[in-house]
Amino acid sequence: MIVALTGGTGGAKFVEGLRQVVPARELTLVVNTGDDLRWWGLHVSPDLDSITYALAGLLSKERGWGVKGDTFFCLQAMGELGQPIWFHVGDRDLAIHLLRSKLLAQGKTLSQATMEIAGKLGVQARILPMSDSRVETRVNTSIGELSFQEYFVERWYQDPVKSVRFDGAEHAQPAPGVTEAILSASAVLIAPSNPITSIGPILAVPGIRAALAQTRASVVAISPIIGAAAVSGPAGILMAAQGLPVSIAGLAQCYQDFLDIVVADTSEAEAARQLNASGVRVHCADIIMRTADDKAKLAQTALTLLGEASAAGIAGNRS
Amino acid sequence: MIVALTGGTGGAKFVEGLRQVVPARELTLVVNTGDDLRWWGLHVSPDLDSITYALAGLLSKERGWGVKGDTFFCLQAMGELGQPIWFHVGDRDLAIHLLRSKLLAQGKTLSQATMEIAGKLGVQARILPMSDSRVETRVNTSIGELSFQEYFVERWYQDPVKSVRFDGAEHAQPAPGVTEAILSASAVLIAPSNPITSIGPILAVPGIRAALAQTRASVVAISPIIGAAAVSGPAGILMAAQGLPVSIAGLAQCYQDFLDIVVADTSEAEAARQLNASGVRVHCADIIMRTADDKAKLAQTALTLLGEASAAGIAGNRS
Image (cartoon, rainbow over all chains, first blue to last red; front, side, top):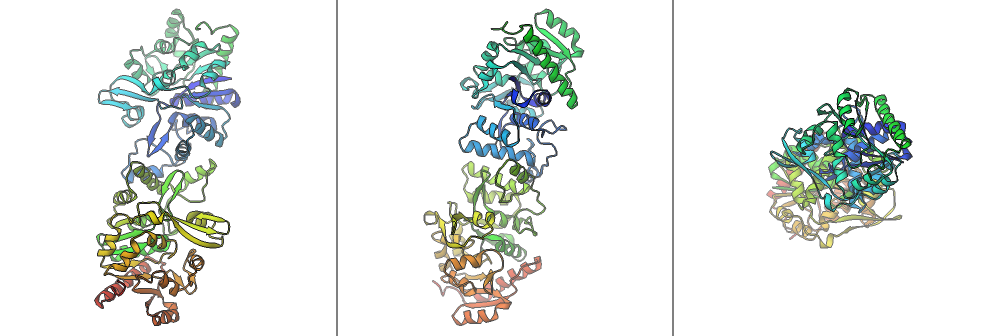
């Protein structure tokens, strides 16, 4: 069983690659829910949705989120009713939020709702929210504390960031199956997601970081950073705000207690050499995913590395 | 102030007529909520919506319900998720259900939510739900008891009906302003709505029927019946199930304790003569509303009758 920790648009793209090279039934996704929000009275889980759509072949390639070919008539009508519309929900996308909200109102857990929705869409891979409890990423900015969506979507991550915290994390538990999946995995992947606000919330749930440190599986992280900036989004800004170098070295620092190998961009030969010298294994590959082929190739690269690492007994050096 | 009791598609059409001949600020609509339902986890008030759309100029003329030009992409996606889709909700229509549900979840009353939504759509007439309490029309059929929407929409009113009841009515109160509006009205109209399941629930709310009997305003009911059948929908079936003649005489019987004048179809001269002979005033007019002009003309006819009745001191003969 291959376990991938994922969140954000980079994570969804990578999962589109994994989907092409790993049989669905051998894949478990542990997904960030720190970005979840109440929107128009509904429970929206942007990262669970993106991963579900990616696995169902429904993810919009143009936008990188939401359903391909979706329309926005309800959104338009909500705007005409004076409701906020900065978080874009398509008409087809809305069906997922309605169904999830209904299932949660019926007393089901987020895990159960996620499994039911994925099943309805024919997804055979296992999608696990990081936790069934509320853990909310809060971004402390120069204009005050914002939810991640307020910071990222509503305000275009323009506000200087002081720090990030994960509200509720200290009392949260991993969703059923998360630590078990990590501990029994044959390989663990960290998607090229924002290490602070996509992977960070997952690691903030007590027990998950320890499971990653304990698992006998090798752990490979694909970098979302090239040079001193994120491939997309605010990963660089947020790493800097957390006092980390914005580089693959900073990434390795985020994951230092469980990381075996970093996959860095081919353009990063020098940074890779330096990081290698400091004792972190680095493999260079094309990490920019433009086409379905790019995605499959990167996923395959990660799997090959994991196979080699496993054969060479790389792992366990952490526990 | 002109007060109209209304529900259903006939009621919405009539309100489209009233809107053309009565200044919006002089119009109060008391609307059936016995058809309200939870749908996809949302609070849907079909009659409040139709009246709101009618007054906002948004009502679909083709369907007689919902928003003109609406699309159904969310509905389609809900179907693909295995959810029930027999109650058709358009993408733009959905915005109203989302907003209402959100406002109710925030602790607002149905009256307050209705006023807020109408205001956002620029409606200046006053729309009052019959009650802020739950009153649910239940139709006892040969296959068991159904909600009105199950009976009417899901099962196309094919099941033989034994009786109709209004669950919760005995403990309900009229929404704020309803009895006051009726008591202080200059004229009261009963729209050509189903007397059993559109007007019936309104009359079942304790205090409303008494207010209609007490008001000094004349009360004119427009018939939804021609000959021995409803112009549309199950009004005839349901009148028969309640032991009433399916005719303008049956209609007059429904409203006997407060009715001053019935507007019947021009084709009903003989039935009108008989009903007149039994002491009920009947006026014949074209009651089929195909065009905007038909609607305006019928509304104007009703208003003229009310003016004449008022001048002649017709009313008060009931209290």
